[in-house]
Image 1 (cartoon, protein in one colour):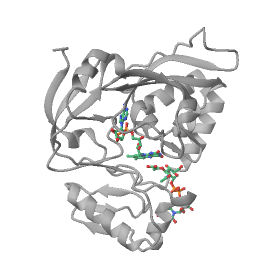
Image 2: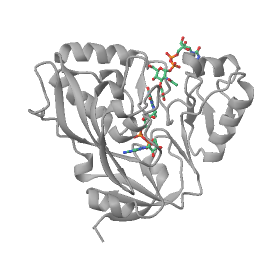
Image 3: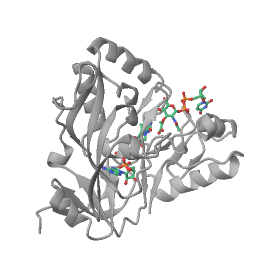
Image 4: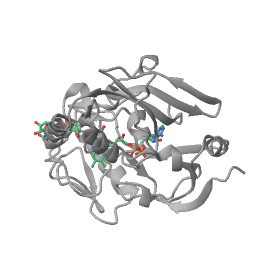
Length: 283
Ligand code: FAD
Ligand code: EPU
């Protein structure tokens, strides 16, 4: 045994929606522990901010990155950095994104401020190239370390077919660490850009939610389409389509995964435009 902490836990506690039954959670802090955890069927859990997990729980083990895999070395790498480009040391996939964005602002380093307000971990945000209209994760990546049951490799963004909310990295390939690529600016300028991007979130609900349910089809707001179908405020059990923004489903307290699935079905059957799900449904 490599010493990973293993515990059976309710996953609701690890998601922003607050829904999900139990699974065996593997807290891994080294590459050796990661390899052991990946030797049986697994799922990789980040910040749990895009997940609808079944009330029945999961049969697969759930991996969570901790320790050094959740720490950020922001020291510029002298061999890779230049006067107009900072390449950092390794930033663990388990690092919470909001705290990282605040640190980069204080340092006056630009490129990732558009992702302000996304409650992810770095690995999860990179895996789906989380972003807003003002920027996305791939704006600030230099190198990605990816771990699979077959081994570990390093890639650059140019090696991947990434795009809107998509890194091109196959599911269950684990983003263990990344090196960031940043541009020297000033704390004030970065803060201004952050506040501007954050302003676009004013109309988003404050309740428990996994973020936007559907990707915007062809750049059109999925929220606008769901709104136009008259679905704002629709309830199923204790879940509701948010009155503030129709692409958000919120947990009113005690919602079940079946409640959320019922609302997703209602949206799919009432919105005339096909839309791709952004959520991950486990299982
Ligand atoms: P999780 O939800 O834990 O997992 C999501 C997927 O990523 C799963 O497939 C999981 O297996 C995979 N994953 C997690 N960690 C890793 C890893 N280390 N390596 C490989 N795969 C991994 N998203 C946006 O893009 N823009 C927004 O503006 C935005 N706003 C949001 C606002 C709120 C209030 C909330 C709750 C969510 C919002 N989201 C937004 C959605 C969510 O934050 C993103 O989808 C985010 O990328 C999910 O990251 P996570 O770490 O929470 O991943
Ligand atoms: N709108 C409505 N009704 C609604 C929702 C939106 O009419 O219920 C209208 C708004 O009035 C506005 C337009 O649609 O004119 C666009 O709305 P918004 O600015 O909220 O942007 P969005 O396209 O709906 C996207 C991202 C969000 C991100 C925001 C802010 C997607 C799926 N959504 O929303 O990302 O935070 O821009 O940049 O790309 C996420 O991906 O989880 C997410 C929350």
